Length: 134
Image 1 (cartoon, rainbow, N blue to C red):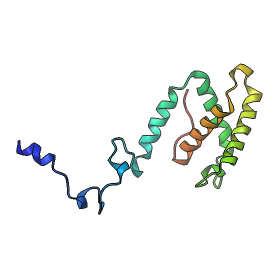
Image 2: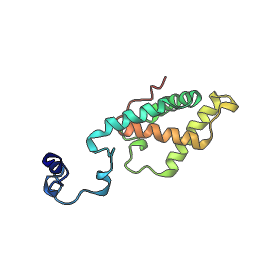
Image 3: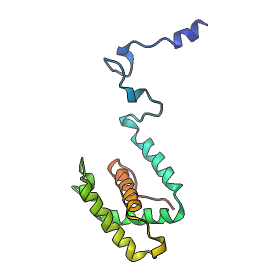
Image 4: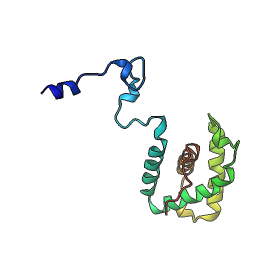
């Protein structure tokens, strides 16, 4: 009984992850990704992208290929706070390329293209690999 009661006693605030005060609220949530766990988060994202429908996976891979041309040092995709207009313009450019390649009934909406594009940019900004979904 004594052993379990010692486990349930809170640690002094100075011994909790090196903080001098109480923990921030978000660090107390289960599944919190601390700064060193980006790879775990990216693996989770890539796994969930594998669950996309087949046509969406193909579009995601094509978006990754198109984005390779914008993936260079100093590119706007690596800006700390990319502006909404530039991202929307990039999504419209990608959609025009897809429009020339895909049939009309398989063409995704502009919002879907923008979501897939932003997901791919997120992966690249955090050290993720290019989409290898197939």
